[in-house]
Image 1 (cartoon, one colour):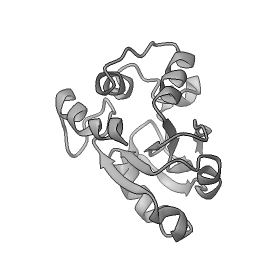
Image 2: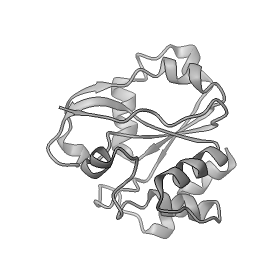
Image 3: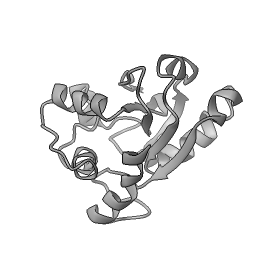
Length: 167
């Protein structure tokens, strides 16, 4: 059973980026998007025309400066390796306390189709409807280094992810 990471958020966070469950490298280092091949930090830097340092504390400062919160749909699950397709016995995170701690969140983006599907199946029907009705839900291409069902180039991902720069 793998357990996810704590949310990264601030009361003034406007955008919540949700993944499915952190990969093995992220869990080992206890850092979101720690796999150096994951394109998450590169995409964020490009859409904000900025530099994102490799130092995790600097990355968290970048998120705070841009109103971005991070978490995952899954709290814990059985999963050999890091592939979303291998997730079994998933237990979703409880989102009500998160929205209380970050009341400015109005946009939820999903880092990949698996995160969006897991949210729809496991979370959306459990969350108090009033909490979710004020949130815009946007599925985006995965930043994972593992090619998925809908493979996009880095340039295509950047174009699609630009939407969060305006939220």
